[in-house]
Amino acid sequence: RTWGDSHSALSALDLAALSWIAYEQNETDIETLLNQTFGQGVELVSSDPYNSVPRMIAVRFHPDWKRQATNSAAKIESRPLSGRDTLVVAVKGTSTLQDGYLDTDLFATIKLLQYFEFIAPVLKI
Image 1 (cartoon, rainbow, N blue to C red):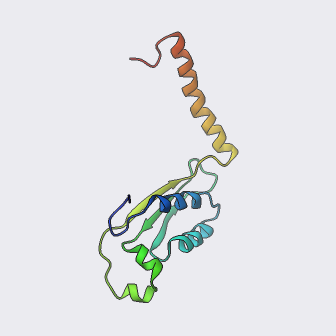
Image 2: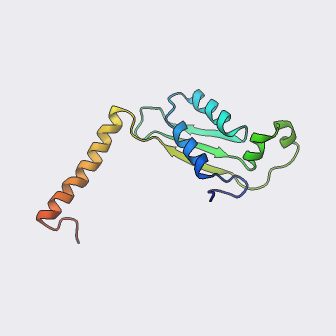
Image 3: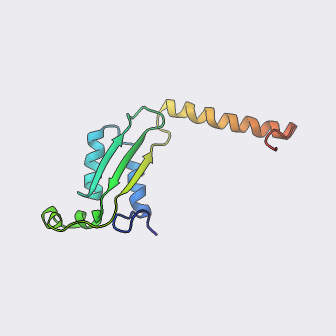
């Protein structure tokens, strides 16, 4: 199974690699990893600072990016690319103390409502 346009589709393994890249702290290192992992047809569109909550990166996969990764760029540029881009947004999970506080805040509220559900029907309309 793949996601995205048929000419710029991604597999689950591609998405998994992208999720790991989202944990990289420096934007230049993210671009280097994208180039090493996916090749020339991939572009970092935006990158939030590492400590922002939530931290997201947006990556554009151009049509035929897989073919560009396996062939030389000179051969590819002579032929027009068909299809549409696929844009992927990867969100970094919990890796800093600030992320942990946010998770605690979110889940504590849910747990508290679940506890009061035992006493009174708080969650039922």
